[in-house]
Length: 255
Image 1 (spheres, rainbow, N blue to C red):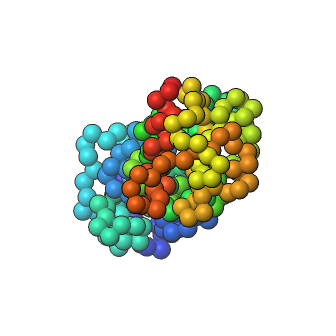
Image 2: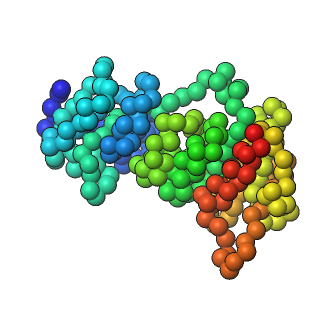
């Protein structure tokens, strides 16, 4: 076990940048997770964890399989540099973002497309919900929160390691879906049908839009059908992550 004491250490500086900046995460294709639960979920996924870091006063669980994984003991000062939470548990994992070959992508038939949803908590909850509902992948479009930011990862509660997450142009992904006879379902209050109307046979791409403005008009023009969820009470609208959960389960049940 290596011990790192200086906050000026090159690795510490890199870890801190992974926590603070999307630019560093995008450039390196890496990210940091914090806390026992998220580190344990990371360890369950092959070839994702690059390094484990533990604060000097913390003991790692004996059941964790750490063969061939470098463990760094860090001082409280170093831990403070890379902690994103107020009450840190003092354990972290430096992880790589998983990339997926086109041959693997060709087998996917159930998608969540995220169009410019900006709140990290919403995006993380949607990733977690897509995981629970059995989606094949989540596609994050332009203008959406970074799926690998600390707040998003924390909200996803480990689902970043369970379900493929890809950042891409939703126009391209809509075309891919149509080329593979996958129904593209948009969400809109106008020119839409009740969400129970579409029949998917377990093959669909659901697009959900920005918290305030909804889906972009450009994408709405490309859908096969647009749906709405009725509001029975006095609320003006549903939270986008809640609406996503209702719709994913409604269409997944037909599989």
